[in-house]
Image (tube, rainbow, N blue to C red; front, side, top):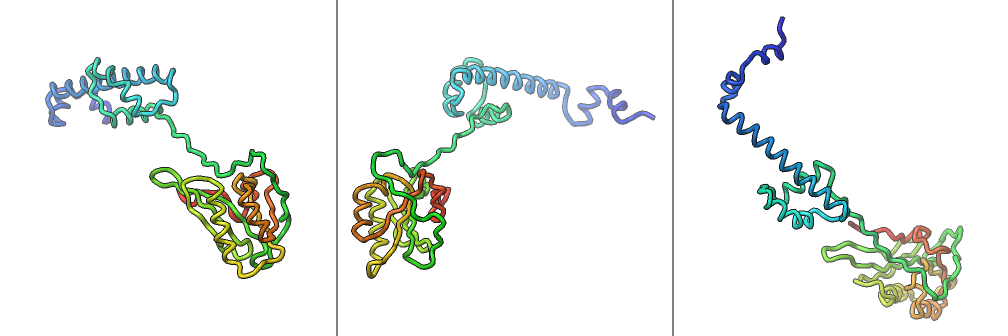
Length: 235
């Protein structure tokens, strides 16, 4: 008993073309076009690999600009989208490096304060304030948000949104938080990382003038600042 595969082997090309409703000329034209596309793709891939040797991080758009003379010279019809698909199929697209945003700059000469809140569990509001800076990605870049949070209630007492990380922005957030106090608070601790904003003269003076104790993380690691955190609000 013959198999289906063996039966098709006995069918001539003319018979197959008739079965699929195409001429022998159309079949050969399709085959030649396929072979030609494969050859052109191979030429482009080889050229890209040569460019990658000198420019391993070059993006697809820049590559297309460099390849245009080569594509025209070899009369290859290939648009930018087709090039991107070819690069992806051959694993030649460059992965974007995720930009890391740093909101803490703790390598400075200003005085840094000891950590006063080890093993401290707040038992009331206005016992411990935690300060930090997070960021929000927008179309044009990033905005930075200075926050003052009450560790007991988790209420945000002060905030300031700005396009820079200048100390004045954190100072304005602190002033907003201080305005919520109707009277001086005994034993209030302000905790933050060792960022230059919190060690600045203006920020420290505001705290000292109100009799607020200053506490900072020991190594500048924002992960120590568990309540406020330094993670982005949104991507």
